[in-house]
Every structure is written in C-alpha cells, then in structure tokens.
Amino acid sequence: MITTPMKILISGASGFIGTNLRQYLDKHMPGITFCMLVRKKTGAGREVLWEDLHTTSLDDIDAVIHLAGLAHDTKNTNDDAAYFLVNFELTKMLYDWFLKSKAKRFIYVSSVKAIADVVQGVLTEEAEPSPVTAYGKSKLKAEEYIQQLSLGVTDKKFYILRPCMVHGPGNKGNLNLFYKFVLKGLPYPLGAFENTRSFLSVDNFCFVCEQLLTEDIPSGAYNLADDHPLSTKELFNIIADTSQRKARIWNIPRGLVRTMACTGGLFKLPVNAERLEKLTESYVVCNRKIKAALKIKTMPVGVKEGIARTISSFEK
Image (cartoon, rainbow, N blue to C red; front, side):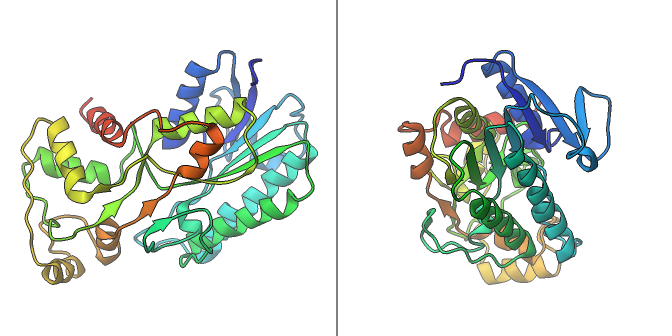
C-alpha cells in the first residue's frame, strides 16, 4: 500500500467526473497534488498544455489519470474524425509519454460502449468487442493501443476502466431529466418498457481510482458498475421518494411511445428516437472482476443510496 503523498497528472479535471474525483482524492489521500493537463490554461493550480506535454519537466509525477474525451452525442453533431482525434490520438500521446516517464500507474477511463452498444444478458470483460458508434470504436482503439504497448512492461501498471452510466453531483444527464419530471408532477410515460440498467455512483468510481492508486492491483481492463441494476420504474420511484413527491407512471403502449418520440411529441420530453432507445433498453454490467481485484464483496455505496445522493444534489 502506498502511503506517501502522490503527484497526479490528470486530464479532464474540470469535468463532472474529474471535479468529483479530485475532491474525493483530496479527502482520502492526504498530501495528494494534481497537475492538470489542459487545452487552455486557466490559472487554477498547476497546469500543462497538451501541446507542451513532451517538452515540460514532469519528473515528479507518480501516476496518470486520463479522463478527457469526446462523449457520445445523441444529437449526432460530431463527425467520426473528431472522436478518433480526441479519444484515440490524445490517449496515444499521453500513454507514449507515460511509458517514457517516471510515473508508475496509468488509469484510462474508457467506457462499456467500447465493448457493446447493446447487451444481451450481462456484460462481462470476456465479451467480444463489437462497438457500433464512432465513440465506442475510438475508445476501443485507445484500449487496444494501451494493451499492445504494455506487453512485456513489468515496472509499470495500467488500468482500463469501463464505467457504465456515471451519476453524481454536477451530473446533468437522464437522472436530471427524470428529476424534473417528478418535480413538476408530470407522469412518466415509459412505464410499459420493462428494462433493467446498471448505474455507477461517482463515489464508487472514485473509490476504485483511489484503490488503484494506492494498492497493488493487477493491470488490466475492468468494468465498473454498482452492485445491482435497476428497472426504470424502480429508478423513478427512488427519485420520487428522495424528492418527497408522488411517482406517476403511465403504461402507454410502446409502439405509440416510439411514434411520438420520432415526431417530438412525447409530453414535451426532449427525447428523439436514439435517446428513447437509451432510456428504455436493458444494459446490465457485471462488476465481479473489479471487486475480486480489490478484495471486496460489495461496492461502498449501494445503488439506491447513490441515486438518492445524486437527486439530493439537484435540490441544493
């Protein structure tokens, strides 16, 4: 176990996950300091421009956390080249630097979408990669590059993390959309869809990163998810309970819902056909491998507690 203060080079530090991660590590790893890898300097702490990575002295860096990336866009405003430029080329640049540096640990935050856009049953690390989108393909290409260059490397550790949907304070995704529905007393119109999804509390994500930085964990790729998946109905009820509101769920026929989504008339819900699919598909992720590596039986934060924490943060 590493107990001495660490210096971390981190990309994507100002994003939703990066902000929560820095706060968590500050609290749980006394003396930790960060050097932010940025596109444009802000003057907030120690910063290094991406373009200066190979010419800046960073001999004191102990570990790298690579969070920066171009997220999947359901509005399809990004072209394929943009995904590969950000998600692959920047990862390649950073991992090349890492292998030549004195840093000993590299955490790359990929995505379950690098492996599968649709899951039949439960997604494990043994699944054959079959990404469909440019986002998933670019993430997978970065993973493969890291794994290929790590063959034979014995004095450094690399970790590829594949989180499912991460939520927490500062998150503005689908949970925020559901929360607004509950708050306004609007009915949830997708009750006819019997889907089950895995979620990941940002606190659980941060816990895993802390363990990877401080403990002797085998290198490799790991799925990240809370211990239990939730149906959308369960999720909606947790949000209502946390907000002290009554859950209203309508079981509108699925065919009618899909038609309304395509025409933009789904109760003023900002949902197109692709987002509807994301809201109603089942996507269950297995987290047994990471728990076995960390020698834990359960994640620190239960799925219902994590959702409640996120919803409570919306009310502040």
